[in-house]
Amino acid sequence: MVLFFSFGALAAALALSVVTFASTRSYLLSQRSEVAKRQAFNNAQLVRTLFAENPSDVDQLIANIRSERGGYAVLHLDATEFDSEFFYAQEPLKFTQSNLPSELVRKTLQGSTGRQRFTFNSEPYEAIGVSIPSVRAQYFEAFPLGDVATTLGTIQTTLLIGVILITIAAAILGLTTSRSVLRPLRRVTVAADEIATGGLDTRLDVETDPDLERLVTSFNDMADAVQSRIEREQRFASDVSHELRSPVTALGAAVAVLVSKRDEFSDRNKEAIDILSSQVKRFDRTVIDLLELSRLDAGASENNLESVHMGDLIKRIMSRYAFDGIPFVQSIPLRTGIGEVGNTGLPDDETLVDRRRIERILVNLLENARDHGGGAKLVNLGKNAEFFVLSVEDSGQGIALSERHRIFERFARGTAARMSTGSGLGLAIVQEHARALGGTAHVEDSPTGGAKFVVTIKRMASL
Image (cartoon, rainbow, N blue to C red):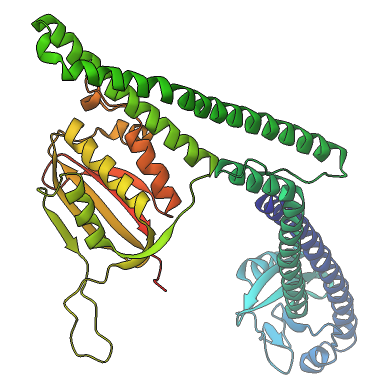
């Protein structure tokens, strides 16, 4: 809108300025030419009268010519018995016949009367030639056009400044108008962003403008419908998970009894018991994951912050879940001791964090690498100015670019996990916990092959 106003005003102002300048230039030059022509003819008549009275004193004759417009006269006389000179220039000498336009001089000497604009010493002039056949003479007069050029230059500068000011004023008007017009849309954008980031109760204020009121009403109705549907789905998932928890626990207990007496059954029954046991475990894990996601969606799971050393915490978690055989690299600079020279020999990894969330993130990533990526081969902890960076590299075939964002969705599985027994919720839980810790989760290619899952965790200074 700003560009439209600016270019529109610029085009209109330029067009008006060009027309104004052209009309003014034509008028001023026309007026100047008419005045110069009239004066030249009057002086030519004076020459004819004076020459008829006293043909012998040509110098006095040319000296008697006066020009109100600053003209310079040149008189040409045909050869007579009194004088063999042809051209006489007016004092103070400025123009001679050689300075006048040669085409005008030639035509005037042939008996024609005319005028021609020319430049002399970088200044504009208009020359007029008048033939006086009664005294066998030709009269020339050159009129300066510098005053007209100065006036036109002033007008041109004024118009240019006017064009610039009009364009700036139009841009300011366009900016003001666009802000006024787009202000409601910006409020809608802010409200939509808040809803997208979890603020489902965000609504627009009532507008007095009828058209905007319709927009606000429609948006708020849409937000109400979206909030109602999301909350209904969250309640449904939570209720289903809670309702399934008891039956799954009972099934697990019953399957445990069967597994304990597995040797008493035939081979075919043993195979069935194994399948039943694995599926019940998968069912139980899915229900647990759904319950956890329900709590995360409802915001019921708050951060329980405490000061920890990230490296030590990760090592303990890996040991507790029997992943301590995987290499762990901590690429964090060493802390500098207060008042000491050098460093303390300990990594600078102390921060305020929720241990439980770190545990869920790391265990889910390690189990995902074990079940779908051929096993984890490296766990790395680094940091930058704002975040700790936790990564787990596996030995699989990697994740295709088209699947890297989708695998963090709920119940989504990559190509490598199609035949696995996972629930498809592990990476979704990782992403939700990472968001709760102020970070993100993504996957990229490992430098040594396979996939590299990377989680950033917001650094918080310890008290």
